[in-house]
Length: 266
Image 1 (cartoon, rainbow, N blue to C red):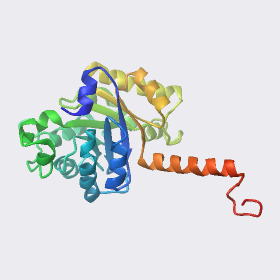
Image 2: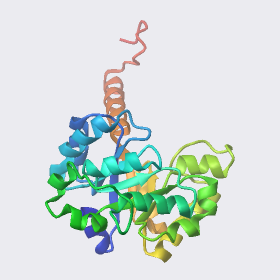
Image 3: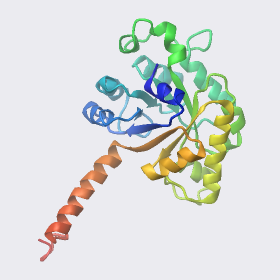
Image 4: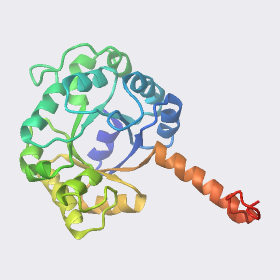
């Protein structure tokens, strides 16, 4: 059983990290920090399948549940990520119940789905009984991040075999506001908070997991109060940039340097 399932079975929320840099070493560092799960972003991340597999290998020792966000609802991407050893798939831009059903089908072996058999690395990463346990093991998360997906929320969450909904706040804000809202996380607009709460409530009613991409631990804590059971709190690019910026700012403050390079700056 994956770590996140164990935590959810205890009635507790989980914390997820995001990897967008195609580096096994960076992924290993992130996974070693104690996150319950880590997601490798194959949609917007600076990486592809040749990066995904060694990143999954590097993170295996951490015991974290390892997700891959695939580029699109495409059976080749979904099945290949699972064969590489991903514990779950997060699929972007799911707009209908039919699309959610296709995602589930791509992730399950017959008779529950249409996944082709060939767990090249997964059989080594997850054990010789992988073929018998994979249908129960892998986690299918559909992203709701469009006005169409939000309008079809009830039919999406009712999809048999779907394990959860992952909310992309930036795209959902853009779509629901018809471009009036900026594409950022940690929304404070009442209408967006109401939308998040509606999604969480729909997931709770169907007994599946609601997940939200957050920018800070404080906002993730608020989201848990709304019913979200998995929250992403940052990722490699933001951790790296924030840490570097803090070091430079601390140095400039202590030394009285403004960093401009102009006379008096140093």
